[in-house]
Image (cartoon, protein in one colour):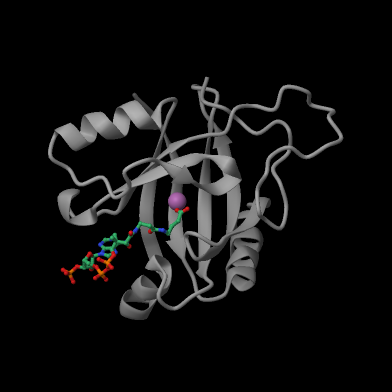
Length: 168
Ligand code: CMX
Ligand code: CO
């Protein structure tokens, strides 16, 4: 079941300048940054609010690290702006299969690694009235909040705090 807006993905040419705009204009602070090589992006997650399902809603600011990435191609064609929306679910596998069964193209056979070790997949924008739509299941909450060792396994510049929200 989709239970929240997990994030809105915003494509930008310069991540640092865009982060500064959101900080100076709205007071939103960076919650997490990482490079996702597979997706071809450097990204910043700005947490807007926590949600009643135990998750949270973010803005995801995205700068391409390759021109031929999804965000790089989209920026070259459209310029900066909203690139996708993402719904949060406790079970991206079940929900994406149910949506696939309705005839909507799900872009990945199996969910892949997303921000903060979440599991993500995408629905084709041409099947969603022009909106590239992502489904996200957050990584499980870290068991020991004071654990010294980072076990997130993220290949990123930083890791989320141990209080990262889970979906269950
Ligand atoms: N929103 C709406 N429409 C989009 C779109 C977007 N973000 N990206 C592409 N389209 C449209 C294009 O405008 C084009 O439409 P027309 O044929 O009418 O011109 C059509 O889809 C095909 O676009 P394309 O430029 O030829 O691009 P591709 O088909 O190569 O790729 C897509 C499109 C959706 C398959 C690809 O962007 C993709 O795989 N996206 C998922 C991965 C992703 O976006 N990763 C970055 C974010 C990572 C994260 O959130 O963590
Ligand atoms: Co996203």
